[in-house]
Image (cartoon, rainbow, N blue to C red):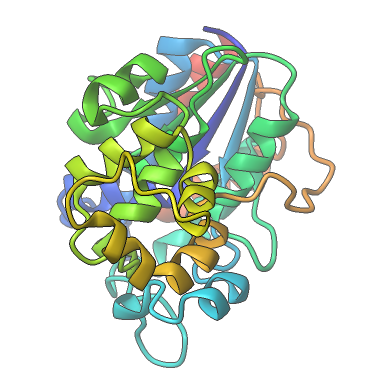
Length: 301
């Protein structure tokens, strides 16, 4: 499906970091496993899917203020010193190198102050006029699948060469909910990996039953506020009532932004490097000749 491909870049470079040994090093001894892995991932994706446009979406703010103000526990367990994210010591120095390589290649790289990569992805997808593929290992982005657009997730849970295609049917089959209802479902059940508490006592099955019965979280809350008693699984109405304050703010945290102020950037997949001299210097300094030559051959083809 040619069109726009959106890379959840942090998800991919974390996957590369943990999937490729740190023995992969630059001439000066610096680990470059995440850099090399990401370059090869991009090559694999472009060869397999031939996108016309490509965006490496970045976290300019991994824990945005608007989400923390709504739910203070948001990603709190991942905070290191100050308000920085806990990132392995040998990965942190590789991120600027990844950014420099993308820029020298001419691959569009977008991060927006105050927003996460997910928000960049959501906004790019909302603005797209054609088909969209989102490459991620983060199921939060299942909320963006839309068969009409079409917009689908290429899920990396089984590896970059064995991507799971997530469309509305896949969401419905996996979670027992309407295909576009993932954000509402996730709001109810919560997500410990993001510090989202969810509604205590409401797990996957109850959340799916509630969303299927009422159609959306908005309709569910309206029924709750109107005193409706039918359609609530045993005990769930009381639990939802007790969690009403959480439910009033959680959607703004769970749902990705569709209106982040994106810069005006050329999204076209490059066929040759934007800055060949810079790319050669990066290849020499960090020992990236192999993966960069493979990627350049793919782009030029």
